[in-house]
Length: 108
Length: 122
Image (cartoon, rainbow over all chains, first blue to last red):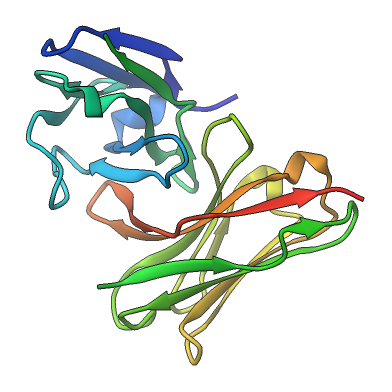
C-alpha cells in the first residue's frame, strides 16, 4: 500500500476542468510533485513545490494543497492530457520518498 | 542539455544480483546540489521509489528494499549505479534513473532516463 492515496481513474469532458487528488498525512508537512506518464514513455514532471511548472508545461495545469490533500487541476482539458498522473512526496517519517498509486485520466 | 541513460542486463536469474548503471551526459553529476535516484515500474503498475544518493555519497533507500539495495556514485565516470540482490520475479520492472531536486519542503524528479526493462526469469 502507498502512503499517498490517489483515485485510480478519473474522466473529464474535452475542454472541462478536472481535479486529481492525492491524500496523505505527510502532505501536511511537505508539498507534492506531480508527474504525467503517457503509454510507453518515461514520467514527466509537471508540477513541483507550491505550484511551479517546469519549462514547457502548459499553464492549464496547476497545483494546490490543503491539509492532507494535494491537487492537480487541469483547466480546459485537452486530448493530449490523457495520461496517468502520479503524485510524489515524502512519507510520514520524512525520511523516504513515496509515490501515489497513480490516476488514469481519460478525456472524453 | 543534461541527459540520463540506464544500462545493464535485461534478464537476470532468480536469486542473482541485478546491476544497472545510469550515465549522466551533458553536465557533471557532482557540479550541482542534486540527488540521483532510482525508480521502478512493474509492468502495468505504478511507480516505486527504490532509493536516492547525494553526490557526497549519502544514501537513502526504501525501507522494504533496504536489505537488498546498494546505490553508489562514480563521479570520475559521471555515473551512478544500482545493485539489487536476491532478485525474484517480483523485481521484474522497468527501471528508471532520475535527477532529484529539492526546495525547502518539497522534492521532485525533474529529469528521467528512458528506462530499461529488467526481467527476472530462469
